Image (cartoon, rainbow, N blue to C red):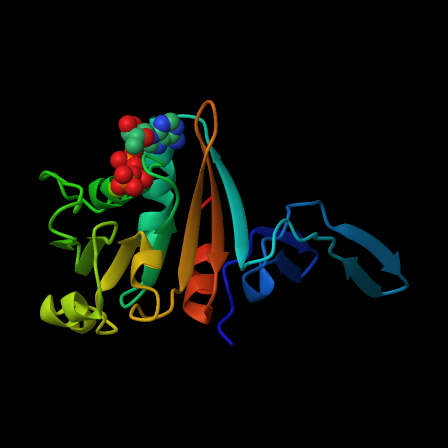
Length: 205
Ligand SMILES: Nc1ncnc2c1ncn2[C@@H]1O[C@H](COP(=O)(O)OP(=O)(O)OP(=O)(O)O)[C@@H](O)[C@H]1O
Ligand SMILES: [Mg+2]
């Protein structure tokens, strides 16, 4: 198991110790407690779990905060990921995808795939596929449009309205649920595979 960079490092005499985040759990920084017993140094490291790595809830009070969250999510994306984006019309799904693309350095137009059903972006060494399946009809269309081939284990597939293609879509690594509030949005992120959990654990603070 690789040794991770500690969140906090302390030195006591010749001994060096660090607090790291084991198994993707976020460790809260707290001062370590030292006790001297004879010649032996006993070090108690206190840490507490802030959230489980398969779930995260994020408050986005305005559109700028959606862009800021997208900038955090972008470096945590992994090739081959499938991400479902759930939420009502106008909940902010496309805004998040636009933010991801901007964060990855894409400065072209990001259209909603409302009519095309899919838009493709190859940027920063990643192949993103943005689906909006609101107008998607049936399995015949799925095959005819070649959507099956897009889920090739390399493309990052971001899917709005996944419920429209239930039974055809591969399962998600990560589901993001958007809730519309009077002011802003709340995001609920649910990791459903190890890849999804790694993505949540890799979100920078
Ligand atoms: N955090 C936020 N707070 C307030 N408004 C936001 C936030 N994020 C996005 N919006 C606004 O929500 C509106 C609709 O966003 P968007 O088109 O991304 O929705 P959508 O979920 O993709 O909708 P659809 O299902 O119709 O494709 C935009 O006007 C955008 O500015
Ligand atoms: Mg949309």
